[in-house]
Image (cartoon, rainbow, N blue to C red; front, side, top):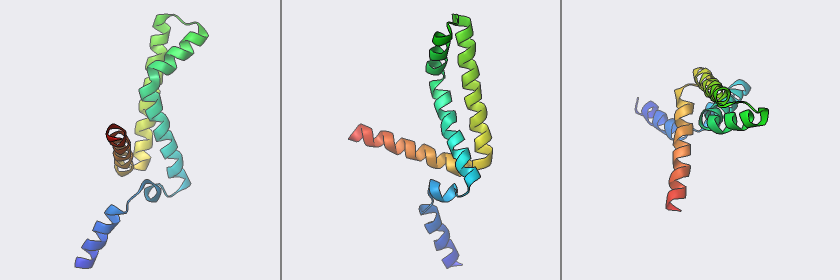
Length: 105
């Protein structure tokens, strides 16, 4: 019983994105997850750039920005359904560590 508990603890410490995303489908979903982050955060910039290139008015650019944001949300929750919460938590922790390194560096 004690061996199982210690193994479970060591597995938790050794858990990485590479270990959790171990199939081609899960790798594809991880790429979709990253794309969703870019779309959600970058929707004003992406929508503004596309709208500017197409010569759209402000209302249409606003609608385009909203559509890009909603697309990012759909991709996020869709990939979350396949990847599971653990992968998302690992990504979030990794991003937090990047920002902490930059602040102290």
